[in-house]
Amino acid sequence: MGIYRQMQPLLVLAFVTSLPAASSFAVRTTDGSARRDFLQSIAITTSAAVFTVSTYPGISNAAYGDSSNIVMPNYIEYLIEKNKQVDPNDLLYKGPDLELQLRRIGEAANRLPEIASLCGERKWSQVQGIITGPLGTLLQTMNSLASAAGTKEAKDAAKLVKNDLIEISAAAGKKDSSGCIKASEKASKDLEKFVKLL
Image (cartoon, rainbow, N blue to C red):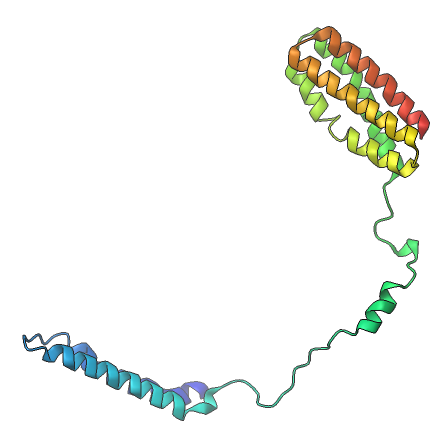
């Protein structure tokens, strides 16, 4: 309410000085006096607004002379925290859950025999659906387990399963049921070899 009382003279002055500008549109003469009156009223309005704003500096809400409360980072403290030993029990992410990933591989292995029956029925879109759906994350899971195992044999076995899945997809694209069945049987055997390497 206090700011409104301080602004009240400014509002009244702005309203009064804008009246000649509004009335200048009504008078139209050929000698250009309407234009001159209009420009004169704009100049008066502008100068009145500048005068009133410059005479009321107390309207500002900023506090003068206060310093900021920002705490600047300390590089030494950063280095100390960076090199501090971390307790593995305090970590939120503790690495891949091997049990969960092995369960995913088991579910994928259960879906591989379905490919042979779907190829016999010539349902090629469903074969592609199994490869991209349930078997879609199989390669990622196998790569994660292979890197956790840290052996070259596990990585090579994962590549064999990947190649088998590519062969299944290519045979389904060609609508070759015998090639698709052979590739799915090979994928099942290679997947078993992969699990035994873990």
